[in-house]
Length: 179
Image 1: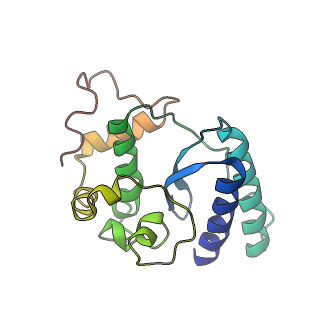
Image 2: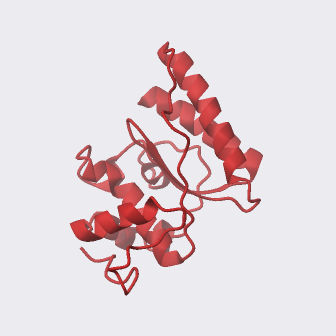
Image 3: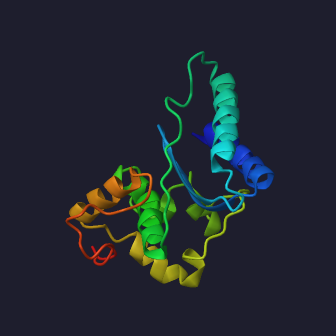
């Protein structure tokens, strides 16, 4: 993971600068990653194509592998509102906790959060308006488990082209921020 993190971090910097992306959060897991990004130049597809091909080559070379690093093309989900953005933000940062890799979100070293908090070195330029609006409150919120039903609804919403809760949630995101 440290080698993969270094490779991914380098190419996130290049991709951010080269394609004009605005990175909000990134979490690297052992078999996937979560990237919350804005593409003001409407070039997300080209940026992700570059990022995946370059990181794939570098990781494959570093590991001495022959097979593909990334098994499938990236999956994107358009997030149109701030409350939906917050759902994705919390889902991504809680992923290592849910996977039982760590106990608290800030303990996970392969994400932008620990770097933003100064626990690890972070070279990736990150635009995080959520964390810095209230660091202690945000960490408390991130470390509060999402109700399992809400967690599954967010997971399903992130699998759509546009973030949208299933129909049974008539109030949309209301209640999704409580445990």
